[in-house]
Image (cartoon, rainbow, N blue to C red):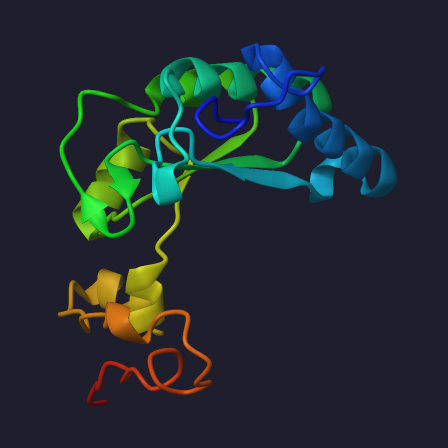
Length: 179
């Protein structure tokens, strides 16, 4: 969907509408097959992973948020603008709020949230839910830790996406509590 990687010249390239066409056709086909109540999508219009940026990510995100309403899907899961490159949480004037206001279903925000950031995003209406990826990976009991405001395990990025089934995915310690 992003103009810096989509260089097609047919009905799936060029304009914003054309670049989003294929994704929306897939959403429609899946909704028709299994029902909108079982369909969600994750978008990252602000991300620039592997040189896949868009010249106007605000317009891309807003267009997709509005367009998805047609299908009545269950949720739209979007990565915060502050997460432009892998692992780099930075301040930005951009916000998911226009997308959140445009999408009529459940809106999930992701992108480097900690406990306080996540609580604030929901309390301020910037998201219905917040997703925690790396923190959940390193803290298999993350809801309990949040409830107790307990210290968190630090994640080790070097163990992400390795072929080892244990190191970094199943060996983080649980919070020790005494009864």
